[in-house]
Amino acid sequence: MKTALRNFKFAIVLLAAIGLVGCAASGMKDVEQSGFLQDYSQLKPGTDDQAALVYMKPGVDFKSYSKIMFERVTV
Image (cartoon, rainbow, N blue to C red; front, side):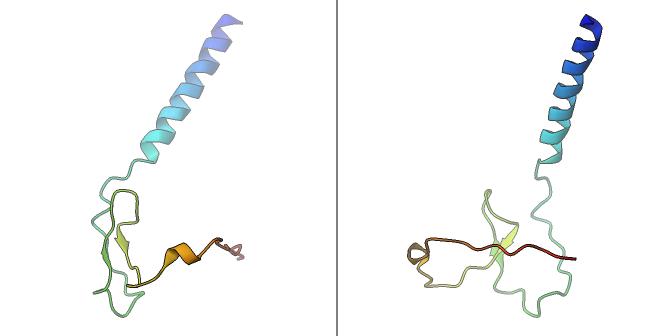
């Protein structure tokens, strides 16, 4: 019983470690342009807590927004 519990704890720790390593953002700044957009010149490098490339419309007042609506993806 103790061996099974020890193996279970080891498996949980191993899965947590794999999950943390899998979430590490390495090489995010090397983004290949796929041709989806016609003009990539307005995209700027994002900060550490943003996507690799971002676009924000100048002069937008985000304080006036109080909610965000996400639509479900259907295939």
